[in-house]
Image (cartoon, rainbow, N blue to C red; front, side, top):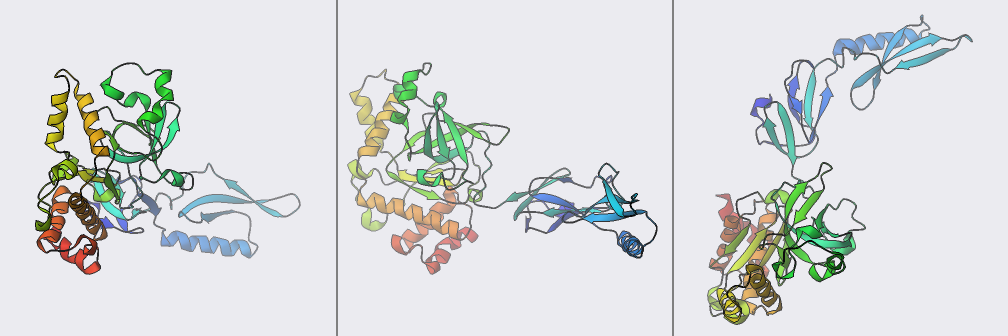
Length: 388
């Protein structure tokens, strides 16, 4: 029965596979599943007869009692005491009964998709609050704590005020040794760097980072050593279920041609070239901002020494991006992409660069205002191209 379960959607309580005996080796229990023992009808009848005999005052013997909840049993012996009263002594070290060695079935404990590797059957949950990190994953997180030569990063992008009340919020650790110092200086971190940690990131800051290590207890160690990662400014954050963001080769994408005809003339100095950058975090955080114009980089390179490190140039670009006002037409493009992601979330569709572009371009072609994109009838109409 387990052969046809590859990537099927199941609900809690649904039977995934059956095995006639414990030694048959039909399946192995994975995450999101549990094993239930199938009771034997003949055993149930024998148990009832033994219980009736004991209640009628029969001679002392052995009776089997079922442990409620998991379908398992333990043996208990009825012993005659010196005062004539009966007492039961439970033997936990007895060998499993025939009931425990009987037929078994594997049942899903969560809603999700089934994955099978040889005999191992697991259910990958679709819960929006569950994220299992892997080395190399792109994370869009929020700083919720500073101290101990490390930053605490919320993987659910929750604000700092929610960290204390939300006990289920998962956090990652960003050590001081895992970030780039100002100017790209390569040296050992000192106590002065520890005191100046809030000059780099402080509580409430959004950033992009990468999973460097997954510890045995599931905690994630993050880093921002790559020049692509760092603090995020002048953009929009959208939070979606992590199951809607799949792993891909490149999670930094640029969407082009999303400007409506009424806003073709754009201010290059304030608004950029009209393109929108999207950072797809595997933890469910999606960051949207304008694409940094190439003229900015050319102007910075012309004003500095040719031998200046690339990290210094990127730092100046980010500072100019954070301090330069976003033009109204670019704000509309960013808001259109943001609502496109929300439309895909509402219909539970996979969020990819292609699906975002399909919804955004459909809204432009049909002349739909940004404020009307999230109307129920518009959500169905704009996402029609993703279901073909």
